[in-house]
Amino acid sequence: MHSTLTRSNAVEVRRKATAVAFSAVITLYNEEGNIEPLTRSLIDSFRTHMAGIPFELVLVINGSEDRTGQIALELEKQFDELTLVMVKKNRGYGGGTLAGLANARGDVVGFLDGDQQVAAEDVARVFKACIEGKHDIVKILRVVREDGPLRVFQSRCFNALFRMLFGGTSRDVNSKPKVLKRKALERMNLRSTDWFLDAEVMIEAVRLNLSVLEIPVVWMEREHGSSNIRLSSAVEFFKNMIRYRYGRR
Image 1 (cartoon, rainbow, N blue to C red):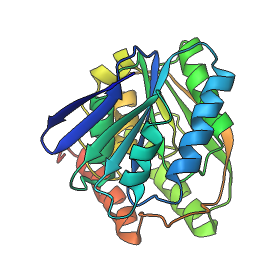
Image 2: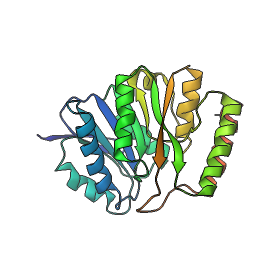
Image 3: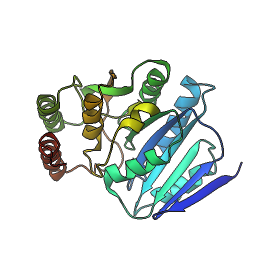
């Protein structure tokens, strides 16, 4: 089966010409240690736990400067389920994810990180729950976290402030995967190009009165590479919440 390629605005899309029921978008920046085991484990898990349901794994190579892009092209030769979105210049986490979502074709669309901190079986559980259930959004809830006490503290503060400013019942705003029915996704006006995209999805969920299901999982420690979230990212989170709340989006 041959790949079809499209190019626009410095983005090259490589996909196999097949219909899909759901799409999983992963934005990757300098993840050469994670991309291959992540891809293999997710495809195997989707094939096992969702047998017979056609899917695509959309890998967004977001201006990576290491071998992430090269490894993605090698994996493309092995898996028909892969769609590659090759972004020449890094667009930020949100910008890369939006590029992936724009090129995803499933009736159910989700996005997640490329750091393997959520077990592949749990990722499949979240997608399956969204496909088979009535909720507009299904996402994880990190009930056990192995990423350190500082991150846990930051997350609790962020979630408490989020609920105070925007309402809703989500206990873990920034957790991924987030999986959405396409009809829900198309009603959202997502524009964040930074890490605030996760919060923006949940703000839109509250605004549109969408139903959200949170599935408890273990959040594992990153084994390969380093996180791209810095202290400045946390500061930007809080600034963005104030901008959104008081109309300075």
